[in-house]
Image 1 (tube, rainbow, N blue to C red):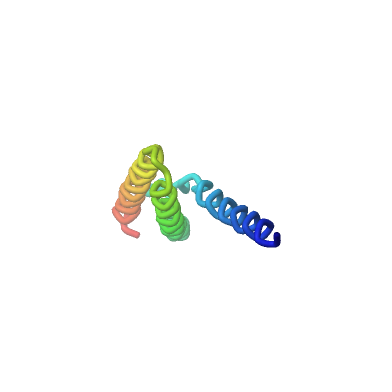
Image 2 (tube, helix red, strand yellow):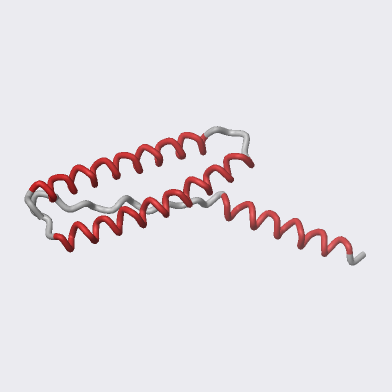
Amino acid sequence: MKKIPILAITISMFLCVSKSYAQCTISDPPTLPDGTTATEQQMEAAQQSVKAYMTDTQEYLACLEMEGRAKTDKNWNVLYNAQSVKMESLAKEFNKQLRAFKARGN
């Protein structure tokens, strides 16, 4: 008789764990300063923000991949690819602003 409550608790624990993977979240990308007018401190802060965002995005992508393997639909793949494009765009834009900053002779 005690096996039924233990089984119910075990099943509910697995359901809670699987739901946590279904809630992959990512924040918006950081706003970058204009390299033609930014100070060195602003560029350094932007670099740190970009690095943190990239780390967070890698964790998000890993979460999506784990979630996707557990599901049969391919919606996670669309989200994964879209976020990868955002990461690449942010890196390109940061590098563009950094080149503009360095071109000023800083």
